Image (cartoon, rainbow, N blue to C red; front, side, top):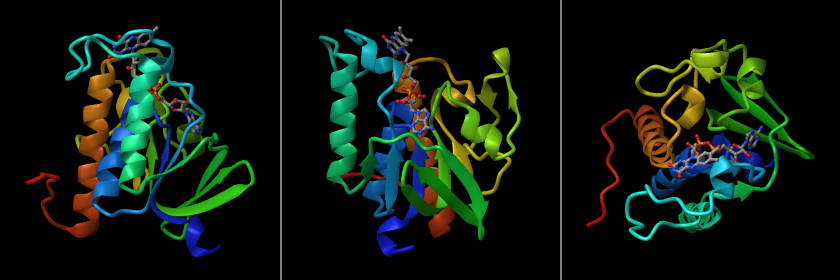
Length: 187
Ligand SMILES: Cc1cc2nc3c(=O)[nH]c(=O)nc-3n(C[C@H](O)[C@H](O)[C@H](O)COP(=O)(O)OP(=O)(O)OC[C@H]3O[C@@H](n4cnc5c(N)ncnc54)[C@H](O)[C@@H]3O)c2cc1C
């Protein structure tokens, strides 16, 4: 496997949670890849009126495209592919998406309604309707170095809540990697 296929973190899902997580990781100079097949429920919302900072509201698809571009601006790689498989290997993960195979140290579930990858990793589902992945306050699942963020963790179904949680999980990953307190503050 060549260096181009090795990432610090791979994120399954590029909705509000996954893209926010990617933005914060990329700004901390982590090599991060997001896989997303553009099926966020937000994409179909004509006008999102409760996302802070857009006083006239913003189209859901527009919000996601802007978030993608923002994460890419700081170096996140985004693949328009579905992750088909994820397996634990050598203390990290091997991720398959179509013909691509990637290695990563950390894996983040941000896939909302799709829980097949979580189940494949041996994670139990719970909460209302048995659709959510259990995480600790840092966003860690029971599988080492596998994190989960956004709606898949059972948080309220609001884009801004998912985005905030994605940022929080990214900061927790960065702090684990660096072993020190971390903030992302512009001057
Ligand atoms: C009809 C409707 C209207 C809504 N209106 C609002 C609103 O006005 N305001 C508001 O705040 N919230 C609204 N929401 C809720 C909002 O859409 C969600 O809370 C938010 O999108 C959750 O963000 P997320 O990142 O957790 O998941 P999502 O945004 O759903 O993102 C998950 C992503 O993961 C991808 N994915 C899944 N499996 C894989 C895989 N194996 N590999 C790669 N990618 C994968 C999906 O394609 C998807 O893009 C609405 C929801 C619906 C259904």
